[in-house]
Amino acid sequence: MKAFVYNGQPGRVVFGAGALAQLGHEIEALGARRALVLSTPEQRASAERVADLLGPRAAGVFDRAVMHVPIETAREARDVARQLGADCAVAIGGGSTTGLGKAIALDSGLPILAIPTTYAGSEMTPIYGITEAGLKKTGKDAKVLPRTVIYDPELTLTLPVGLSVTSGINAIAHAAEGLYAVDGNPIMDLMAEEGIAALGRALPAIRADAGDIEARGQALYGAWLCGVVLGNVGMALHHKLCHTLGGSFNLPHAETHTIVLPHALAYNAAAAPQAMARVVRALGGTSAAQAVFDLAQANGAPVALRDIGLQAADVDKACEIALQNQYPNPRSLERGAIRQLLQDAFEGKRPD
Ligand SMILES: NC(=O)C1=CN([C@@H]2O[C@H](COP(=O)(O)OP(=O)(O)OC[C@H]3O[C@@H](n4cnc5c(N)ncnc54)[C@H](OP(=O)(O)O)[C@@H]3O)[C@@H](O)[C@H]2O)C=CC1
Ligand SMILES: O=C(O)/C=C\C(=O)CC(=O)O
Image (cartoon, rainbow, N blue to C red; front, side, top):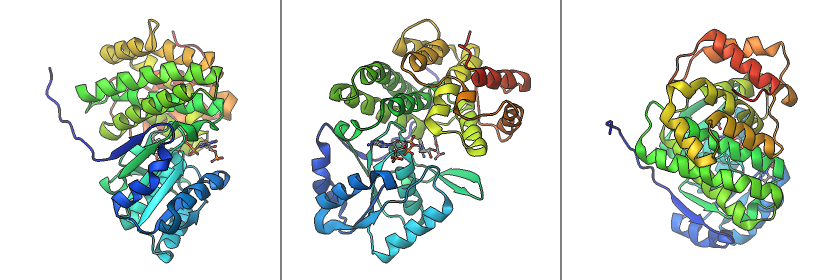
């Protein structure tokens, strides 16, 4: 076995249908007395439910979370947290809301209690992202890792099937890249394979019945494991491409991950055969790239970048940006092959 470094990250998880009922106990365990509840505008009702459960421990609701954490929103939320004397942030929602909690924690050190309702996995990582003047900057800081995570599958029953599938494949992407990360390790490999397998089982079941609580639980379990992998090891080509396409062309996050992942895996296949074998073991089939493509297509997800807003003229520009500030990757980035990868993803070709 090759040498490796493993960093265990602290964090408490309360998991199960109905787990939201544990919120009061968990807030008390954090020693918090004035929690600021965060949500997107559309999920305000969930935030109010959380505030009701917190009773006198709720300092207020801030419902203006948006994707990629614009600095203006982060500043506004930080001001509100200060004015209300908040000593904790409770984030209920997807990666956008957790990301806002992280922006507050980065500034103030307030502990975060996260209640995820998508499969993005941000709640398991010390990674934050803030967008300023159209540029998203990401970084790592232990302060932003949520102290407690409540995974309650009941809260995900309203997540539309289409988003469930693409968000689940966003999670699979974290694990798949973790399998060939430069700083990967056998513990993360175990979690990655188990996380991919859980999502591979759950997504078709959710498509068949969005109210299947067992499948919703499997999906959250998979998202948890994949999020841990993202939080522990580095990202590679796939995440770089997605950050380029999301950041510079404003493409939707989970859909972009879903479309790009099969092509990134095809690009890396020969350079990372053991990683590919684990993905195949988790999803079935004979090729990791095709297994992910088929999972997406069979469950109604978009497979072509042109269908989610990328213009043909943007492909060259995306290629140029993706080649700058490269993330470590098992296969070196070759301009012609990356251009072809993007073209294939643009057209929605099934990888060979
Ligand atoms: N730092 C990290 O480690 C990571 C960060 N991220 C970041 O997180 C963001 C993406 O996260 P993601 O979760 O995909 O995006 P969002 O948090 O924006 O959620 C995606 C969609 O899911 C909907 N939704 C969420 N919960 C529910 C629910 N219970 N019922 C119905 N609809 C729901 C939201 O609807 P509505 O708009 O109505 O609220 C939204 O349209 C990006 O900014 C990404 O960069 C992602 C992964 C890891
Ligand atoms: O951009 C961030 O907030 C940090 C990481 C991610 O979004 C990971 C991902 O691309 O899903």
